[in-house]
Length: 169
Length: 145
Ligand SMILES: [Zn+2]
Image (cartoon, rainbow over all chains, first blue to last red; front, side):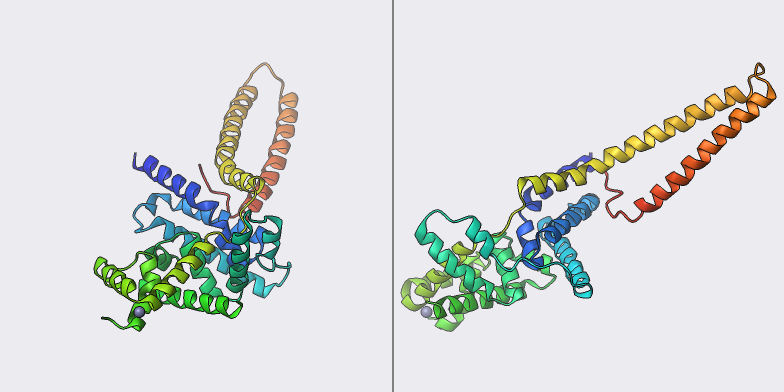
């Protein structure tokens, strides 16, 4: 019975989070195949961990932490053996999938350019909060930092993003 | 009235609903009275809504199907192999025992057939050993469903 509950909980988590989490892995790795590979490895690890998963304070934060470590492993391996060309930024994607309304597109395009200029840790935390909708406690779990750090880093990231947007006006 | 500086440091956390109720109220009161902080708050809220719409890549349906297949298929397949090999070994052992103890078969015939079978088993075991060694390097081998 406990076993079935654990399986159901892990299955739900993977269904809800797995596919969406690809964007995060891609943001860290900038490479589609590597990102897919990292997501798969994180899902496998979560499945193996399923019997203990419900004891975790927040399983979604736990999943992102596992995924992040998978990505960092791949970045380290890449540093040792530089190989494939990376996807440069969101530009290709934006060009392929134009956003319908013109006004929205213009402001999102400006934001995209400013977002790309942010330091990695700031892009990462903004993505986790604003795109993936993680709570501070979940982000703290994912990044292995205190909640206070999440709060102050987000504050600085948003302030810097705004500065860059205003500078480009 | 609290300083604008102390309010502005909290606006980001206010947007995320991550402050205590008391702090939320304190900031709401200030925002009603201070156009400067209000403008900054609205800016940050717009910015936040836009990030949600950034065109981050998603896996294609096909990429996702392949990944899910890789995740799910290995458990049932491993169990299938185990049942198949286990059953075959028991069956072969039983047949061999019957053959070796059947008094109606002469000794030369018996030794020849057993030699052929032993050779087959040895070949099978070495091939199987190689497969097993290969499997050890597959990090997803023991995912079960
Ligand atoms: Zn103010």
